[in-house]
Image (cartoon, rainbow, N blue to C red; front, side):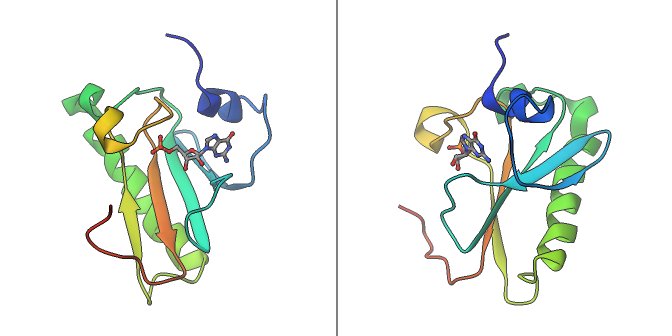
Length: 114
Ligand code: 5GP
């Protein structure tokens, strides 16, 4: 499978504003923010889409959410609220085929989305 832009960020081949890293996950600010606070939490393992997640990766997927939870507190958006989004394929609006959890906050977000 070819490298995505996120694999290059993991390998530090391209720069990113990194908020958190451990052996399993990386979090960094979105280069084109859709809200005052917008960052992405990704697994270091390159899983292309939600459709490719395997049952034995459940803990890793849960860790994305728990990392988002911690960083939302750190970023000061936890109490007011925020949104977690993971897009899948064309109709979901996915453009980078390495799964990622968007964390959006800092303003009121419309629901339902367009
Ligand atoms: P998707 O549309 O796949 O759900 O989200 C991909 C996200 O990655 C978009 O919000 C886009 O702005 C962000 N993105 C794309 N390329 C880069 C990059 O090189 N650096 C960073 N930090 N974010 C990126």
